[in-house]
Length: 470
Image (cartoon, rainbow, N blue to C red):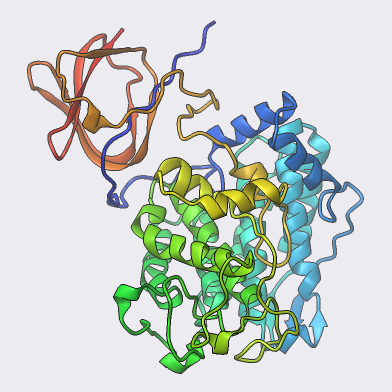
């Protein structure tokens, strides 16, 4: 039987929806449609997905021989000294996620079983994290465990209900660490990412809303825009920036070192991607602030511009110690980075011009997972269209903006199906006589189950698109 044709209708402005609908599952870094798309591309040996998938398979977390070890108590001091299960905990989460992605692509139950073994080992043994880095390590790990569990639970992988319930208990223990304390830098950003991931797995709408509120509150305190005047601060005084002056896109931790700034940025983007899967467009809300960070640091790390003398005393360390100002011996430029997920949203969807980010992305090869907040972004983000139906099928139409359709005489024929908009909007669906059928504020328009005939989809500005449902 032929598959229904899926179309994309693009509207001309963005806004944030009221958070009232049920959470989507699977709904972590990727939706089911995106997971299906990734699997299709890898199995068809298409790039860049194939190279990225093979990198995941061959990496330290992707092998079937990976050795996991669960702990009752994970004890992580400053700089992970003492280190009792610290690296193991995060590595095991990454391994569970790597196995879950291999299960999605290959449908080999051995990968699902391996992921389940890791999730079960930890959920039946783990009690808590402790010492100086307890919140940070728990949050780093939680992001990967929750995303692995989300995939395994919602893709018929054979995870027993009693084991799912046990993992829920572990997720709540991790959430305690991710929600506790007075963190303020990259640690706070990863706490917010962990809050988001755990809320989705637990199907906890209230906790999800709280995580999104935290993202919105704290992002302006972590990345600077000139329009801020002086940096916005919460929990710490302005001296934490360690800079005489401030430039567009500077991070709270830029003067500490570039490495810690990237840890925070990765978590910010990870949380925004999970929110996007749940129909909340945080990328559009903070596009200027986040792309300013990307552009400014790209110029410095690529050696195109020097760090201004009044910013971080003219030197930014590539990596550093835990001291407030980075003490690493290597200074900017630090080499190219690849921010595939951010580029996908800002350049591909929001049509922002990011030539330096594109250059870095196209010359660095697939981006794989890495301690502590790096995800396999090339595999899970690069080139994934915003025009997918539930089965991963891609739209057969281009994506014109609604504002181009003032010529009311043009009618677009469609078949019953599920329609994903490329941005969040208020919209109404009417018939040609003006009778309103449904209104919503969301990314999705569902034409399944509607009778044939003429419809009008319009946004709150009055722009509209005539549709013939066949």
